Length: 67
Image 1 (spheres, rainbow, N blue to C red):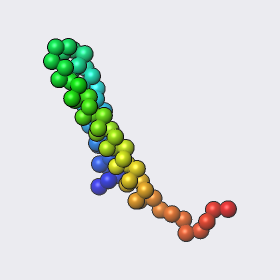
Image 2 (cartoon, helix red, strand yellow):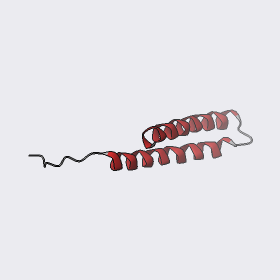
Image 3 (cartoon, one colour):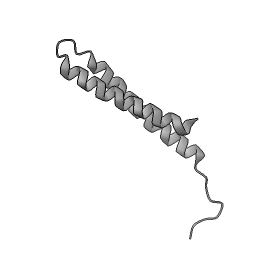
């Protein structure tokens, strides 16, 4: 599950970040896009952390030491 979840969260985070930036640029009065940008950044951080955890848990370690 983790192999596809991290990229999916990352893509959603990037889309939210871009949509929030565009929304903020187009709607100067409301500034509602700032919250969308913040959630996009949070999703990108979560995706990075999730990818690191999954990689750490699933990486196979060689039983023989390297020379």
